[in-house]
Length: 176
Image (cartoon, rainbow, N blue to C red; front, side):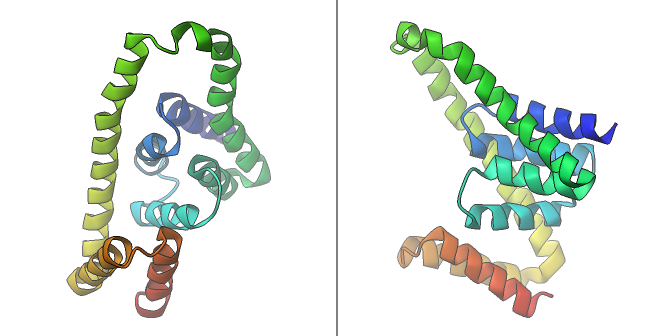
């Protein structure tokens, strides 16, 4: 039964996550943390941070990790297949219609309409992580990491992978 739940959780998250990894992250969080309880919100945040620091698509890295944690090697394979299957099927089916609908106003309008929804979903996820960090690590650590991250990304223009790595190192030194 666990393999079916893994498949379903990642299949639904990725079939509804129109637009790639970022839109599917809140959906994966809803399934993995809220619905099935395989990870806590803190563990999910750590997984998201680590997954963002590594190269490649975020959804597949998350699926592989959660699948392995829940169901071992077979669980990882099932979760990865469920993550890739919706896109693979859609590409195979829709490839024939690309030229017909490329300039259709409905397709352009749908793409524009999805962008604010994705932004809101990601903002809610960021807020949940912030509140969880605030309660778990306190005001000083959370505030320092938020301000340091902002300064590093926006002022110093440091690559996000280095900022994430620095935050992980800070957490390992001061929050363990």
